[in-house]
Length: 120
Picture (cartoon, rainbow, N blue to C red):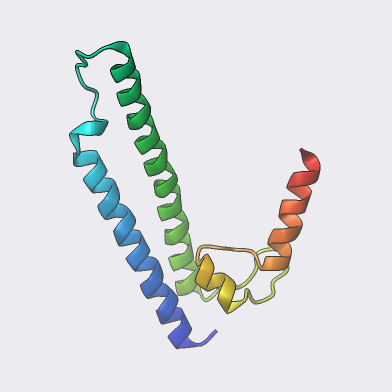
């Protein structure tokens, strides 16, 4: 991979991480995820709790994505970014554009998904 491509993906990953951190900060600052003293009926209470749980699940998934972004940035620094963990071949540029945190080429990911499907 060329230096310009590494720079491109570094910028892409850092921008995505900054957006995720900003969104998480904004969510945590909102009153709608804090535990409230509900004085409404049971439907209002259930609706509020359901919405709060939904937001927290989203933020949990985003926290996991931030960790993957950090690992991808580390791989860029190490020079192993864009190399498939399974077969050692280069991951296609289009795949990296679509999912820059990926560690598998499309063939190995397809094989992994087929194995997971067969186990079910």
